[in-house]
Image (cartoon, rainbow, N blue to C red; front, side, top):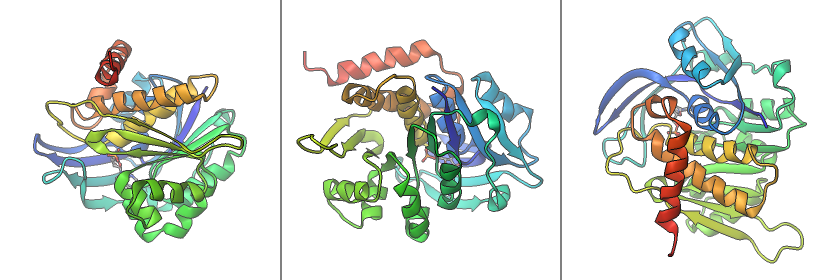
Length: 307
Ligand code: AMP
């Protein structure tokens, strides 16, 4: 089942203890699409500038990602610069240039309209809401956001949350969004804003799925999976989006949303996040093979299995 994703397609300058890369291909929608493309068809809505050329386009094309909805505008693409020198779990943003995203009016190509899954990757919540409203027929909607939008654009973000089935954010963002320190209470608060499921990412420590009980069910359900302990993290950029791509891509590839499917989706998210950090930018996932995903899924199974 196809996923339409809206979010940033960007150039990133990144510094980590492993080195520095200037203007590599990045953006939340880019990392998400590449990861999800191993599980299902992916269609992107974004805007890029004149600096986005055949070399960048080829990264999407090589994974069979539909780029009809990536609009070309005059000017420069979204640019982000960040570092992880003190803490590999948290990016320090040095510069964000919206550039062509500043005046972006998302348009949904007709060929995207039958998508049953929608992912609102990290971008201005006003744009997320517009895309959500333009695709009322979708079966399942998930989304992401970040501290910047939670802090300064909360009313617009709360509007987006009303239209989400699943929110995928990290633990700091969960506490910030709810204004509470207890993760469990914060998760309940966040789900009261709209999403019936919340996936909380804990960086190198894994992820937790909170699931609001449906009518007739005894209680809220919670499931936690670890992240793979890795010898070296080269670049954490895109780990969260790759997690979301693995998680949502796997859901979209399954006929029913059962508790077992949701649990496996958390594992596939963790698998894709673990690959993302092994090289700078999109380098690892863009060159990944499907067999490597299956092998790593088995490693995750061993990591958590009792006998
Ligand atoms: P993450 O998966 O959380 O590491 O996301 C990393 C990606 O988010 C980078 O490739 C950036 O280009 C992108 N990004 C950073 N800041 C923003 C922002 N304010 N809006 C949209 N995308 C962003």
